[in-house]
Length: 564
Image 1: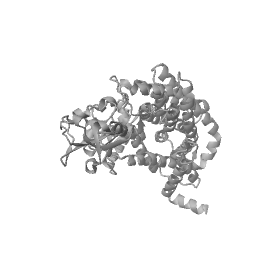
Image 2 (image 1 turned 90 degrees about the horizontal axis):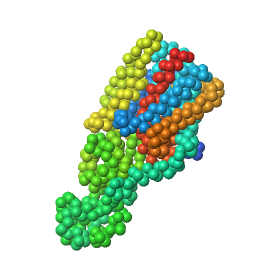
Image 3 (image 1 turned 135 degrees about the vertical axis):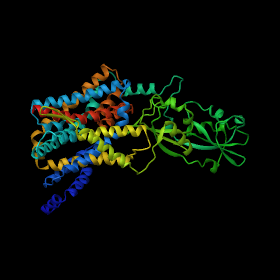
Image 4 (image 1 turned 45 degrees about the vertical axis):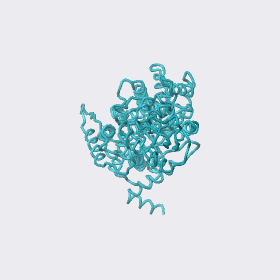
């Protein structure tokens, strides 16, 4: 029976790949407490298991999936990456670069001391830093060294073995280092540091206390206005609402007609107004507004949710406090703020960055006005601009083809790194010019998650026959080196961030989690901090860390090829 199963997979490797994906995602869901293996590790394990049958995967298949993954990484982080290239972001950039450089240095040193081999070292670097992209970049670079097919297969087996060990150890060590060890060596508790920053970001110079009111319940109620409001314009009436609260008049019923609430419309006796605002405010102020009535038609103003991407120069670098005072903000509520795919806290002192996504609630006409001022509306759609995707993957690959010959040494970016850079430029262009290049979140997930998992599954299938032997031989040593990589890289970055740049502890640890491309570590740090402040540092660290650590795959192979 097993022989028949093996023969089917050998004859049809495409089926073997999808079996590896199905089993891999299932294995990745295995949970122990709050820890899960994840799809990448699961697909590697599944690939290794299937690889025992002798299945041979085409290198072109692996490369195609990997290029989709690299494009997705670049596209997602492009706006944040280019936005970060300024003096104000220097502390976070420095911390990220230091962490990445130290990690590379430790792996290089360990490789030379223990004579690990180029493949083992490459998998170790990718796993210890939880940067899966480094695997593919290292493979792409190694193929350009003139290695024959036998050497390439051996390289892939070594990469898969060391990556499997180091990735698991790296995830656990990074979580423990950033959430448990590092906070113990800071001058004060992480929760206290985050609370202090929260307080400063929630207070404005004129005494406004918070920008988080949008998270509370929003309602619409109808009132026959109190006589004290007669003669006032809508704008004058709304001016009486406290600045740290939001409520506005949506519509007015006058003698049977429903009128839009224009700012200069004067209220008359007997008018019925539809007021939209925070529930607790409307309950507390009902008597002052007037007599509440049930007017279904007047209140029939469907509320919508709309994601708006910040691109306009006028709003970039503005705080949420400042944006809240703009006329267009009067009639919409901010419910969520996303940066590099991560939700960040809605504090008044948070400055908007290009590419940030604001999830707004309001009526359609008001949302359209707000979207025009902020940037563009990112409405759900299934349409992907594949012309844009295909061209930028192609152009990025072309950028990586040229090589510089220094004697016997060939230096070049390689197709993988070129595609990553192409994705960065594509994402940046999309953030600035919204008329082309749209890739829906679902498609981006497919490129990112399935692209990487399929590539890793192919690597595992190729490495299958020699995986167990390699694991037994080098496993314990790789775990120790991985711990050293995590402790030294994160420890050095945290020391420099605190002593040299005096960064807030929460933002600093969030930056380290981003630089180490570890979302699980970020979640653990937020739990310890009892705050979402660490997310303010994660996005920038993640954008730069992804690029550097992927590049390190090529750098490591190039250097070790000259010494080992």
